[in-house]
Length: 393
Image 1 (cartoon, rainbow, N blue to C red):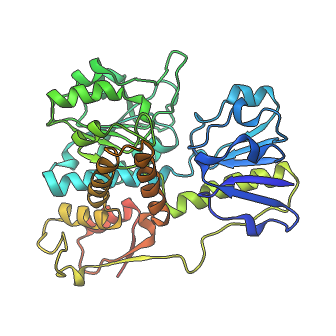
Image 2: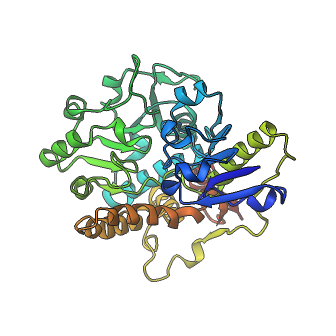
């Protein structure tokens, strides 16, 4: 039996029987020759799986270690009788934490009053519902916009026009081009024009949900609009010009974390084992997995963003941003990518995009940060607990 896999999926080949042949390589480089005699293909979102890749191959199982399936030609795969499995929901907590980190950057940099604001979550599936629960746990008001799924109880659901009038708009829809609720360019020139100037727009879902050309035109005339993009049209070579105007830009890493990768690998390998009647694999975080420790006693260190902070809100924001420092990643991404985009080789930008994504593979979620909370107020402790941190006396 032969398995071909994206090299960025959690390494699991040593856990299979020795008689299984395993080939792994960068996801964007997997080609028809690689899979011609393979039985199974394991990918992430960067590999397009369709007739061009699999026609004439022996592949009978495709597993994607991602929540979305828009990189898979589902209709063609079904026609061929190829089993397809995804890892929907595996990265939901990681993406929700990314949104929290964005809000906390805005607290520290722009003093936005998050607890007095309304957050509209557009797309209330695995990720959106996780985000709603986390925000509600923090006491932040949420509304939802999802004509297909309304799985969160007691949530006010509104249409898109109403959602875009919220203080913060978070996009977490799947990508689709057909049907009454197609999401391709769901946010276009008219929708952008309807935003209030103080509205914060966050897209950590799918890049093509926003018309990136219309967004660039909008930001030319509304440079004060705070837009945060983790996903882009034309990845891994997004518009460098658009990037200049985006408040926070990151290279599609919102769902990247050790925990998300373990969850995705478990989902895919369990399905693979069942499909081929293999011995079921048991994957778990190693006992020696890296933990982060936040100790308020050392906040006086030079360079600490918290050493002068007194308010509970800013202390909370500082702890969150230490666990996931989007300010640093944003600046690094822009600095390196904008230089690469001016190169004569159009692939240089793609190498930067994928290289920075790879650097985030060891990111840990908030639960890996143990906060020494002795002396913290009950309110601050409650917020930290709701965000997912482990509190220690």
